Length: 561
Image (cartoon, rainbow, N blue to C red; front, side):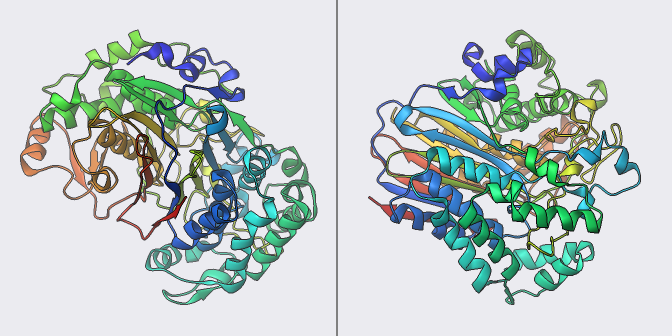
């Protein structure tokens, strides 16, 4: 891997703020034909159709992404919404630029340095909410890069909130899990069975107000006043000055090369891009395609183990903490690779570090977009736990996140997912909590030497990064079909607990036996995890292939040129 071309990563090593403030100007995909049309792949068909409606109306991928994100916040209320945040990874075709819009939540001023969470929950109730960023992120994206007015992008979400939608099997399961955390407003809206209709009139009114007045109303207008009043009355920490101070930020994505492929991914406060770069950096000189299946699995598990160890120990909001200068230094990564014994698993106890969460959160969402001009969006959005804090603001209808639990609210103590983190991700007013969300573009050759782009991302808590890693390797090694890159059984190691979590069928019996022989503890999970939504763009022909995850009920919607 040519680590000298890791522009963003090198700045991360030095802990420079330019990692977060600059816009990436990277090489455009070579010999690209215009896509044969536009496509949106999302976890809910109604949201994918909302995005396509923007393309039909003359909008671009960024308008489509705004409409898709807003609609998902209505029809996937347990997974995302304007009471949460996320990351939008963009490719602007006209100027050949990649940029990340950071709409991650921030800690309210009253959160202090985490003292409040010694007596209050960082999981349930309004005090667990960070200052929402999604509305600001959508507003920034549409204003700078869209073609349509924001009012147009908001129309599908407003309509869905008014008319309602039936509760899916997946959503019904999330409701059953989290109903005890619901406040009375949430209970009245969401405590329903599969097939029943959820309508959100208060949210529809809020969205209509934002459409008329702009997203600034969320932070400095009537909506801000209503939200802050609800939070003050009901014990939340967010105040008007927190909302007024919030800004979505354009950041330079992480970009690196590996064996002829170019990867562009999320930057801090997402740990996704740097952790991918860390794994691929360890594997700079390994030809994975030539390895036997057991050797390949062993090597990937050991590389994940070391990358997650460093992720948990050192990464945080780089506006607040300095990333070690040698974090992605090729010599350091080479030493880590040399520490991998191909015959034996390295016990985590030999690698000092901190644990990553063990949960399989599906309560995040991802969607992928491309338009006929080649503009692209990979967006991963979240409110953390299913239905976030379980608190719906009575006067706005907004589901508030519980992203404060993504901080190390009690450094050295586990959070809701079992995550034990260090002070790099400790709470501080205005700070953004570390995330595993990993929206990613992978550009590289195919079987016939023609360039292709893979737009990919997924929900899944701590497993997001390993899922994107495995899907990207499927694309890079090109040994199976595109559907298999997304749907193949997955495995994951996150340093602690020192086990290989895996879906049923991830390892053939002989490979599983060999991994156990080498000292790996295998833990088969009862349920499959993740809900990846991807697009494959073949540059020579312009052909688009949408790949919704078979684990969910997402949809790929195509609009021909």
